[in-house]
Image (cartoon, rainbow, N blue to C red):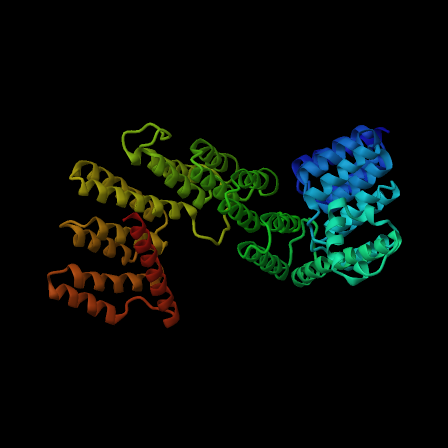
Length: 570
């Protein structure tokens, strides 16, 4: 017993340190099942299912291993994964074997209400109908048959054949209510067989049965055409369940196509929003670890004014499945801002920067943009000027880069520190232009010095980064003034010096740019001629023409990006 308990603790210690090691979890659950100590079973399964709630088979296993609490476990399961046909099937089976008839019927009804339009819900419908027949509740069974033939689900033809066989064994008053029988009789009155020939009640009921089935068959055939349409997309899906293993790209594409179809059907009013929701929820079982599908789902709900549902989707995504994926949090923060829940939005940003992605560039810049939008509103952090709120966000992050060990940044990627500095420089540039436009040169010059110190510091530490040089050049051009060309010449002289660590390709790019700017700013043709001579002499060896073109393309792309951002601000 002591050895088993030691083994249990070893598993727990390891999994607390590595909570998403799915393979070790499965080994642990097999171990506690064999151990048969109920307290350990509860501890292990509770911990596991909190992390992996979509694993419906483990919910069922847990309920089987803990008969004292199995009813409660199934309720927890359907709360965690309400759109799982499998979990509802397990729960209904449990109910038929252990609960009173009325309680069982209520569980079946909840199941049908929740997942009855799921394309794979055939087994659940069949189970419910057969159970009602076993209870000799034939009217209930008839109503279920007539309801399900209106729903496009897999194996609908089997249900129809079952219904036809069943109908011939039951009296008409168990298959149709009084109103339906009156409607059928009105139709039959037009038939000469009832008008001219006296029939027995049994014969009339046969005619009634035939008329009822003809009516139901028309409904069935209409539904079947929809089944065939949906089946095209269903047949391409190979995995409907959750697993930590990545999905193939072809499967992700199949889900995207299926969702496109569902939304188009909804827009054409061919299907209800519940139909689309069911497909999204089914999609999220195998794609739960992919932010793109959660975000798409939330946006669809928001566009259709399902605000509470949208919030629930974002909460589920960020608290359970995408706890280390910044993109889901950023979408959530922007959603709450659109709903004017500004404090919640700020809280999401703070959670990201504090606990999840402190060095994530997009998070930092979007948080800064959020606080900029908040400035001047009742929800703003108290400050005299907008930059007093925004700049510290960038500066604190830059400070963190220099004082913390950055472990989440790929070694081959650009230093996010330089990218942050570039974003801050661009922001300061906009504020400088703002203060100049407001005839406030004192504030403008104060920010000018801050921006120049920032870029000089970054270039001193990362002088081989061409993007820093291009940002500084762009900054001086936009700021303007009588000293613009003088400052630009200083930048070019420094960048083209032998001491500068820029590559020869990038130095050639700087030299080319210096000629272009001299033509714009210089009043001395000899100065322009000297730069031309220097460029023709080609002091910096360019390895290939393609490399030069690539650098020029990057410059163009960067300038386009700057222009786009400026346009948004106007």
